[in-house]
Amino acid sequence: MPAKVVYKTEIKSVSILDEKGQFDAKLGKGLIPDDDAVRLYEHMCVCRHLDEVAFKLQRSGRMGTYPENRGQEAASLGAAYALQSEDWLVPCYRENPGLFWRGLPMEYILLHWMGDERGNQIPDNLNITPLAIPIGTQMLHAAGLAWSNKYQKKDGIACTFFGDGATSEGDFHEAANFAANLDLPVIFVCQNNGWAISVPTKIQCSAPTIAQRGVAYGMECVQCDGNDIFAVTKVVRDAAQRARKENRPTFIEMVTYRLGDHTTADDARRYRDNEELESWKKKDPILRFQKYLAERDLWDESKQEAIDAKAKEEVSAAVKRAEGIASPETSDFFNAMYAELDDDLIQQRDTMCTHSLGLRPDELEGADVNRRTKDQLKA
Image (cartoon, rainbow, N blue to C red; front, side, top):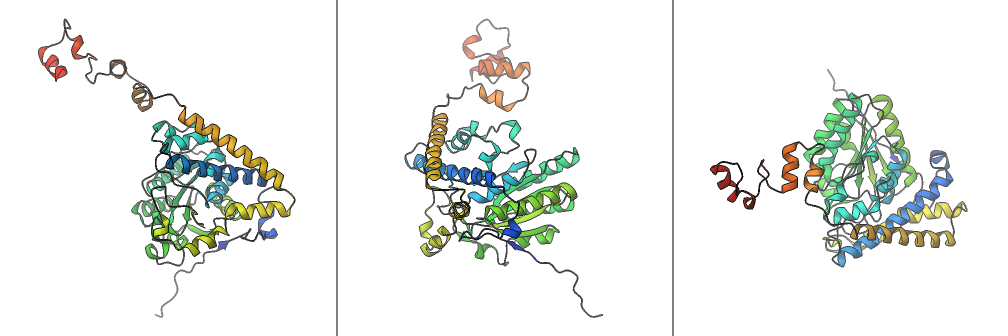
């Protein structure tokens, strides 16, 4: 018998607002109303200013290592805008704009990078998981959250974010296989910024697109301009509809670029060509969005000055809240670890003694305990 083709596919690349501000009116019709477009642009400006301040905080020793979001604001923000409040956002560590849009106070992110665990204590009503520093682990969490929602017949879906390098991790393949085989309502968003720290995408992935890595698992796959908030909104909205109606996962590759270093512990000049950086600066998601608004008389210089002033005020207030937070109490270890404390744990918390009797060596005199217990506590 002659050989025959058993499978063919194609992956579309979606772009609506290009780097010159040219807008595809047909494809982008009704995606983002004017009022929302202005709000989204203002939000991006505030987030960009936070990056600038966070960088200075790290350089002045007031904060630990920080990964800038500069240049990638449209990816997570467009996704958060397209999703609903009951949907889960499962980030890695470069999704500030989307997290803040959902309602996470800015100081939580600052506290996280200051090493304060209270920055990871996300308010319950936001449906956001803490930042994931290990590469790829959050994709498994997203699949689990989606499965939970499906099992409980809840309306919410899960949307997780990761970099191009994370698709080479085993966790990605396990999560993708799990989601596709069990028909889970989850969206996998790969922010392909061209670099897995200092390793270029072309070295760690020989395929023409990252998106096609999802094809092997039977997922719908699409690529979009990750610096185009209209394209991001469209592909995420389409994926969300598929997840809700069909319980099917989608893999989205958002082609973007980090304009800063990988983190403040990195120096991208050692491995990245300056011409490449300069070419991507022209594709800045904020600049093209500003052109779009200005051409429609929705933005001008006076409004820019106003949002710049507002950004400084809001970020300054967030820094003050983060740096002015009260020192943690030792009892927080118990109170944050357990939903309910039994009597034994309460005694341990209140006495700071690890023994279940809750006695310190200096309290043993006259206590009704056996000699072995006394020797243990003294030791």
